[in-house]
Structure formats: structure tokens, C-alpha cells
Image 1 (cartoon, rainbow, N blue to C red):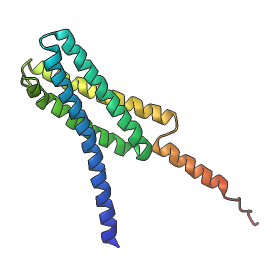
Image 2 (image 1 turned 60 degrees about the vertical axis):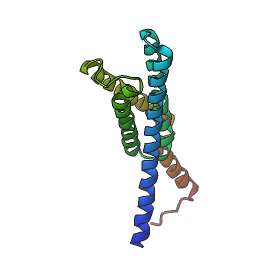
Image 3 (image 1 turned 120 degrees about the horizontal axis):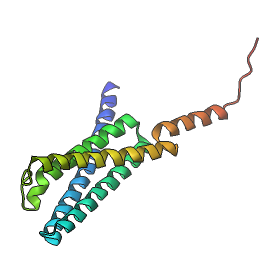
Image 4 (image 1 turned 45 degrees about the horizontal axis):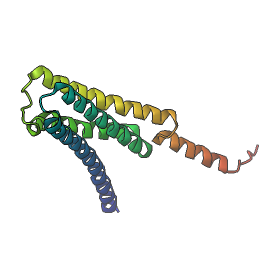
Length: 166
């Protein structure tokens, strides 16, 4: 019986890591596409490069917000926060460390200040969009806990009340 329990937990963790990996892969894909577009479309035009970067940050924010809403409906907030943090961390590291090589540069080509400001900006976008999505989800009563409390209340109302004997 214990072996079956362990196998079920293992399957759950495998699915959980698969979801985190898929989120990280999507975020890495956004970084790759943005770097390639910046390299071939923008060239040396700083204005176009900035536009491509902001569109990429918008795509990252939208992706994390959608993941927060989907996961927030199914899982407790602690798990959702940990999963989103893991995916965003991998996406950020890929974007900052590997991304510059795609566009023909190096991570520290513009100096350490630019490198760390990029990390802070990515983190701010990730935290802000995820937090906003989770707050809206909670305000609408569609998060995991609100839905569980609603089911509990419905089952309590459905049961007939037992008279108390004195």
C-alpha cells in the first residue's frame, strides 16, 4: 500500500516538474525570438531594439499571468508561487546568460550595470504580473481556496439539519 502511495506522489512531482519546465521553455522561447528579431529586424537602431525588448517583456508578463491564473485555480497559492518562481528564474537566467550569445554579444558586453538591471527588470515584470493575476483571481473568488470553501458551504447546506435531543 505504501509503494502505491509513493508511486502516486512521484507521478504528481513528475507532472509538476513538467509544468515548470514547460513554462521555462516558453519563457526561453520568448527570449530567443526576441533576440533574433532584435538582431535581424532592429540591427543597430536602438529605438527598434527597445521596442522589441518591451514587447518581449510584455509577452513574458502575459505568459506568467496566464500560468498564474491556470495554476491558481487548481493548486494552493504556496505551490503556485513556488512553481512560477522556478519557471521565471530559469527563464531569466536563460534570457540574461544565453540570450546575448544569440544576438551576437556577450552577457557583460554593456557592463555589469546593464546586466543586473536586466535581471531586476525581468524579476519585476515576473513578480508584478504574477501577483496581479493572482490578486485578480482571488478577488473574483476563483482561486483554489475560495473554490474549496464554496464547495464546503454547498455540501453543508445540502445536508439536512439534525435535531438536537435534550
